[in-house]
Every structure is written in structure tokens, then in C-alpha cells.
Length: 480
Image (tube, rainbow, N blue to C red; front, side, top):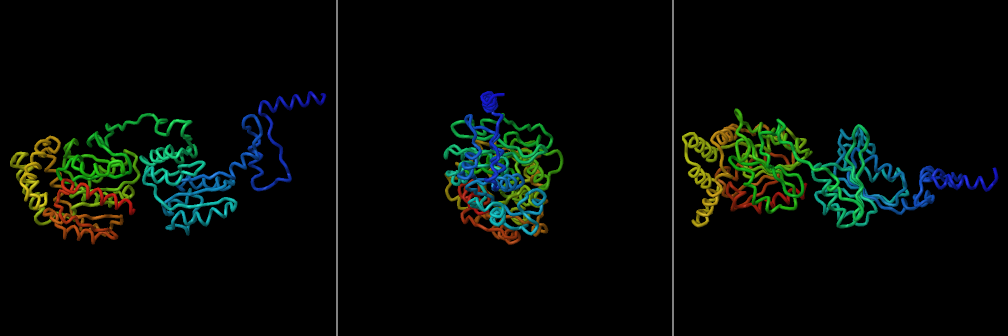
């Protein structure tokens, strides 16, 4: 075979991308084998092994979430010789992490993951400029503020599961940065993709098939099918006695666009079914936990008002893994005194067939602050408003009686010492149903909790103090 024929044969192989760059013994270093790998590929029809390594060395990647998948991705990125890597995580090392999160050791348990990474990553590769952010992501603005200078952002975090993918997606387009999504580790390995490149690909949300929850499943079938939420972040609101989910309207309006609020009617009120048999605070807590599980939400802030506060306390005891924290409004460890007498009186009136109009007036009189009644026009307007929406606030006798029995039977006094959860306890200074002293006593029983007093507030804070409630929730979340 002539030289010309040999060269023609080689050019033919090259044109079919069947040749790779040869190994140069003089260039043996930590990256020589990956340059050899890159040599098997072509960019625009030409070899690019060295170009690939040079581009890696000048690239900056941000990785969010250094858990099971994130540890392995971060370890490989560091080994590849990237120019800069920023690791972002706000968690601490837990014993359950050690079976799969390869960057942590047993003596790291309880330490900030970011503190451990500061020690471990430079040991893997001293050529890389590492930086670290110890922060929990709470919305797209948090992502966007970090990735403006990134060549690639990678999401390996998966919590809060129903929010974080949307936050990350929303952050990519304003700063025009590419982002790689992962969906955690499965039996087939680490799920990667899609890669979203603003201006070139669809966004993450547009690439997903539509999802509609199936509320026919037995564990949630009795709960209303119109659970609603805002735009961002996991917060489960737990209603007071007789209060439908729309009672949170003043709070949700003030928080709109900032947090994802999940509102639902517990059994016995709103659009949910009446309970089939006795109802308890424990069973209501179990229903709320099943709803979070059904919606695939790994953890939520609980906002509970009055009876909803009882449910939040019980839920924290029974389902601590899904509770990130709780804000309790007008709630004590049990019903006592004037508030207990009022509910027993309402229960009797229900049994004797009192009209809904009479009951609404009695409940407003007991739950609104006394000075509210100084302005008769405001009182008349409030009564007219409730009567105009009587169907929305209507509650069957069976539903009310079941919730009243559950509230009267609840006594959390002996269990409060077992609650270890961030908590904010809020009292209304003019609350006659649950006195400020009783609310403060609950605060003292919950380790590490904070106390706040709304001096002009009565028991129905959601009616008169919705904006203040929203402000308290916002401040509490910011401090978690």
C-alpha cells in the first residue's frame, strides 16, 4: 500500500470521527487520562481534547444541594479541574447521610455541611478555587442572586420537593444562565436533566407533562379537592373551629407571591366531608400529614390558629419529619375557662337547633376584640359580610359538634416537653377565648420558642389582623 493510500485511509477514518488523539508521555499529569477521553470526541469536526480541558479550567460552576447525589457530582467536578466551584447548602450532617454522602465522616455529624466541605474539597484538588455559601434557598431570588456569573448552575437539592425545581427554573432566565436539573438517585443511578439553556431550550416547567392530583385516593378522598396555594414555598395552614380555608384570605393576600400556602378544609368544615364517626385532634393531624405526603412535600411550616394550633402541636409530635417549624396563633395547651365555656354553650345551642345567623353573631361577639364593637357601623358591616357569605362559612351540625368534641377533649399539657421544633407563639392582647396568659404559658413550655403579642387583637386574628399575621409568618420563616 502506497503512502498516498495510507493517508487517504487515515483521512477517511478521521472524517468518520473514528480517530482519537494519541497519548503524549511528556504530558502525564492528573488530567492526562481525561484529555485522552476527550480525544475520542470532536468539536465542529476537529479534535478538542486540550481545548476541553482549558475550557473546564476557566469555567465556574454553582452546585446547590450537597446531599446523596450532590456529594458525588461535587467530588467529580472537583476532580475534573474546573476553575471555580461554589457549593451551596444550608443543612447539617445527619447520621442517615453517612451511608451515601461520600464527603462526610461519622465525626462530622451535627456539623454544618459547608464547614465540612471547606475542609474536604481542597484535599481533592488544590487547583480549583472553591467558595461556599451556607444558606437554605427560599425562592428564585436566592438562586438568581448567586448564579449571575456562573457558566453552569446545577441543582442537586430536592427539597422542598414541590417548589425548588420551579424556583431554580425561574432564576435561570432573568440572569440568562444555563442550569442542569437532577431528580435524585434511583435504582438506575443519578437522574440528570433536563439541561435548560435560556434562549435555546424550553424551560423546565414547559418540558413537564401536566400533573393533576388524583383526590380519589382513599387517604385524601374525604378532604376538599380545591386545596389552593400561592406561588412559592411550603406552608400548611390549619384552621380553627368552624373556620374554612377561606378564613386565611387576609393572610394569603399579604403573602401572595412569596410563599406557597397549602390551604384545606379539615373534616367537618368547608368543602370537606363530615367525619364518619368520632373526630380527634390526632386524626386531624394525621389527615394533614397524609395530605403533605400525597402532594410529595417533604417538609412544611405549620400555621395553626386556635384548634389548628392543637393540630400543629399534635402533628409535630406524631409526624416530626414533615414539620420544619410552626406558628401558633391564639393557642394554648388545652381549652380552659371562658373559652371552654363558650364552646360548650355553642355546642348546646347547635344541639337545640339555633339558627346559623344567631350562631354567627354569638361567635363574632366572642372572638372579635372588645374595642371592635365601639364602632357599630363596623359591627354591622362585619355581620352583613358573614351573612352574605354564610354558605362559605356554613358548617353542618355534625361537623361542628365533631370538631367541638375534639377541641374540648384535647390536652397537650403532658406532651409539650417532647416537642423539639422551631416555633413562634402569638397571642391576641384582647383575646377572651384563649387568654394571653395561657398562650404565654404554652410558649414557656415549648423549648426555644418565641412569643409575640398583638395588643389590639382578639381571638379571630385572621379577620382583623391578617397583615400582621403575614408579617409574623414572614419574619419567622426568614429566621429559620
